[in-house]
Image 1 (tube, helix red, strand yellow):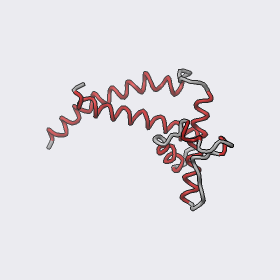
Image 2: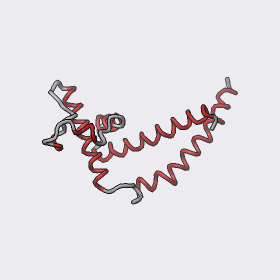
Image 3: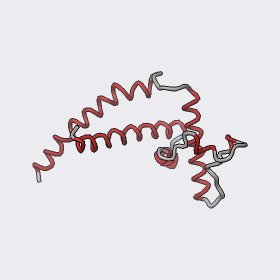
Image 4: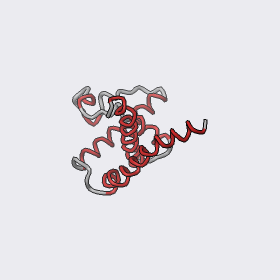
Amino acid sequence: MGNGILSKSRELLPAALLLALGMVFIVRWYAMGDMVPGDVGDGRYSLVLLEFFQRTLSAFLHGQPVDFLNAPFFYPWPGVTNFANNHWGDAAPYVVARARGADEDGAFQACFIAGLALTYGSSYWCLPKFAL
């Protein structure tokens, strides 16, 4: 039993070191610098849409009628939410962070950190399966 834990820790140590290096040298610039691609409107639009998703989900859970696909800020065009970044896949970390008491900006950061961590974890799991 002891050898199994030791071999697992030896296997996970390079992954943990690579993750730490990535956090120090790559994510730090995105979190604290001005190297984020796009302009300020891209982030604002994503934040507005994630907050709209969170409020729509909250209204749905409280039994109120909702329509996420017809966002009021796209009026008068119907169904436009699906033609842009609708954040169906990455809204879950945002909603969880908001439910745990984070403000909009903190939940937005949590959404990005969760995406980075999931991308790293899936790469760590998938790449050896392709002999890379």
